[in-house]
Image (cartoon, rainbow, N blue to C red; front, side, top):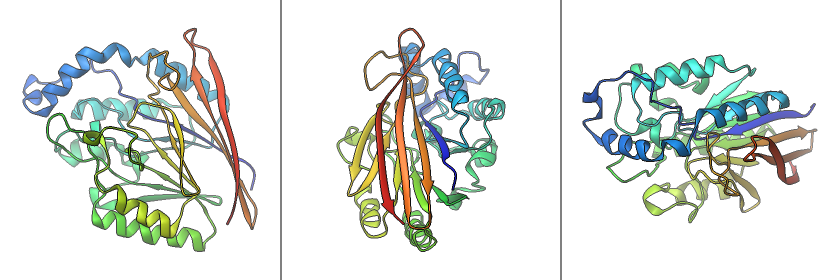
Length: 292
């Protein structure tokens, strides 16, 4: 197959200062998150996101993957704003999974996540994990986003999702597909604090040990990290909207090339990060070849 180009971004957190919404909608956990947003709104800015998108456009990817947190407070108005933003993007294919901010509180599906179905391919909460196939590549999207108590941002993959994931991984291996898993919460321990972590991480890891995968992408931590679980690269990316100048927290995106023949896959990836002058530098180059 010809090289397949993927761009991965995460934690968009589209701005809410110009949205019109009822103050009554903040009479729950959203109020604390609203105060947090007010305090940190300058850490995540649309101009950095716009600049990230412009840089990705030059790459002309076959697919853009977004690993959650398009919203801040999970307001219906934010889901509408995000859907409008997604429609405005010039990319051929976009695929997203929800983040914890998108599930901050329990919401009406039809007023929120249903608006994102063109990009999640999920028509209900029960549709996860969702699989997207193109050429010899399979993208499996997990939903780790759950409503939590104040001051918590945990994720969870329910039993039915895990069961279906196991079956999907077995099938993609039998079909000799290059399998990429995308989720919001890190699938490794010690990347985020316990109150922000994936609750049943061991259950997921046990499935990965048995069934395998070629690559895993996540967000949530707002940090760019490259790790491994067994022989599976685990790639985290910082917020695409970040105004930080710190090394692993700058607004960034993952640049991924995937190639394969009948017997082997080759995956190359790097990170493109914004500088304080709004230019991009490319670093952290990796290449790996795996048997199919």
